[in-house]
Length: 212
Picture 1 (tube, rainbow, N blue to C red):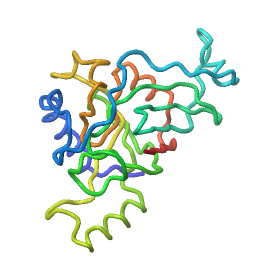
Picture 2: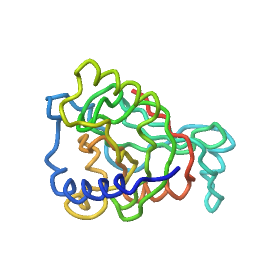
Picture 3: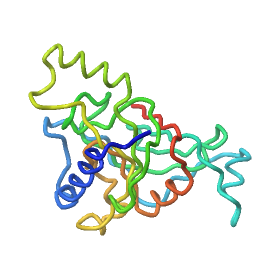
Picture 4: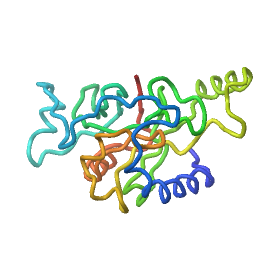
């Protein structure tokens, strides 16, 4: 999948500006309540007796290759799936725009749907896995909303959605604690060491399923 240069530049631009503003963000511009604050800290333990999970837990064992990433917005969790089995789970921060699919640019919602890892940008929020938003369903929804006059003037469908870390700047000291607030522009945020593991284990093209 080709990553258009404007999307890369837009992502880099909002990263540079948002890194300073993000710590003060607590709710969306419409006053939408954020989800219950997740507990910061280490990855959430996954109870499983499966072969894939058992392999992943053995010291020095090769890590199974991830085929799917599952993100639950209401639970604030991201799960790595290998061979149909969950092998790792993390707490995440998302956008403060509330439940439901992303409607348009600037609504601060994390999308809902099925996507792919469309590439990666090292150095953007530490590491940035590009989510292939918008998909065809997102485009159809946006066209209908625009037809009904429910898209603010000048707003597009949105772009530059990703799974990323914290990176430098004002957010660097907030590892773990940043998950107490939904602060992204619609992305999914992990700690830097967590996005390193996710990126290392997940190839481009892997499925991403985001649910409410």
